[in-house]
Image (tube, rainbow over all chains, first blue to last red; front, side):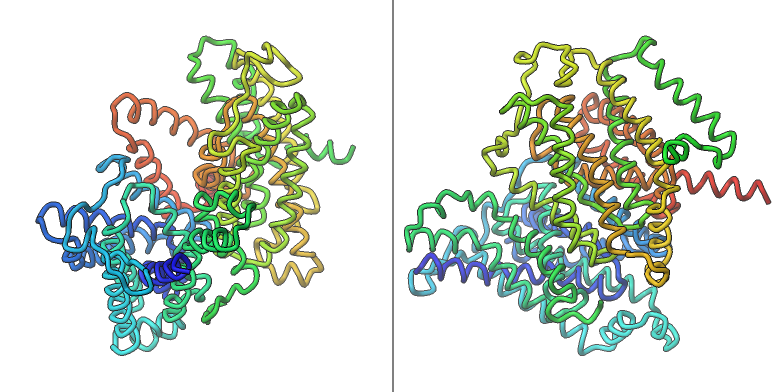
Length: 304
Length: 335
């Protein structure tokens, strides 16, 4: 039983972080209908930022969050102003392949600078500590902190989107860019802001994830696909959708643990033979495919 | 008969195009006779393979406007069918290649049917997802060698073996893939003038109008997807015999899918010459950049950085590709 509960708790904690990862993607998509394939690479940039800031200053990685947020914001704005703006004039093919080019660019730049080996955080206040939250469920402190801070960051962005004037302007741009322009909203600047907020939130998530996940230049694609799955399930462009879908996808990522539980509890032979840990990420891709086929709008989507 | 006449009829192209095409074709035919490095030879074979992949992609992605980023799964199906049949049952290439095509087309119907309900970005990402699912499955499936992949040992089949397509010298592979390259061009030339080709172009321009004209949009897309798949799967089978060592990591990776789409787009999606031009520019560029900058100078990744800058530039500046620029220049001249 403790394996099952442990998996579920781990899934929920991971899901909260994943929700923050997907938040940036859903904001960018909602505001300007463009799919950012480089999203996972933004996360990678956040992870490297967190790691290197911690190593350079000797601070705990958790305190590098503001640095990561600033770097992400600037990266997002820079990408928009320097590149994405020009893509918007072209057809959809150009947008897809353009952001793909951005993804390859960031990935291989990281490969060039940092090499292909895994890097991870070795010391920090929380690294290596864990809590027993009762019923024999042991939770690593880093994951708990990452989940908590993710929820806070998520709430901050949600408040920004819903309770401030800038957020209203962003939402207006998302709903109808032309009408927003007539109302005097500088939509061009709103687009840049969406990329800034999107980039900032995902790099914060990266700086949180680096506490318990090794970083290498190739890990971006996995998180891009995870974020796509979350955004598809939650509905493209929906912020609350991203949160709930993040939890669901977090659980999907813990399927191997749940599978193990059933295998051992009921002692089913063929289940033990399935190489579940190797198929860990297949469920995410499959989930994306199924969601898109069954309900393209997602759970909370308002864009068709 | 009508179809063959259509396939060899290039008369709607301007004469300069045809002269250049003839010159290039003659160059391809005599290239192996001149002294060349084995690296240049391998690059040429890669070029033909990717030109064929690009032609396949061009049917659905170029003429049909449906951006497919999951072509690698069909490369994998073709390559694995050929390799498995050769290793396990000693079935030669010329028999396993149609079987691979058949499997690939069946799989394309299975996933194409629900996939084509989606449009635009959603379709593109869903094709990536299916491709990655298949790659992960092949990664653990022990029948096809799991993550280690399969190796066709040339010792067991003494070269040259025309039936199994096992040779020691690259020149045999060169002429075989060259033959298929020309066949591919003729097929594409027929395709763009066929009923399906016209239907697709009208779908690309405006799907609702196409539907109101009585075109079965969904069926046309699925059919074209199957054609594209057959192309890609054939080259996959060839890839298995040529490379002789296939792993899920390099046969079915997303990079292959992207490269295929990118080449067609760089050359000019939706035109006959587009994928060929794109492959002609990108494949040598990629090989030589890797050779000069990656391997020789020890800068891992810089070749791909330059390469991604090209992608970004082409998509931002001229999304219709090199052929788009050519047409623009022509239109300006005519004025």
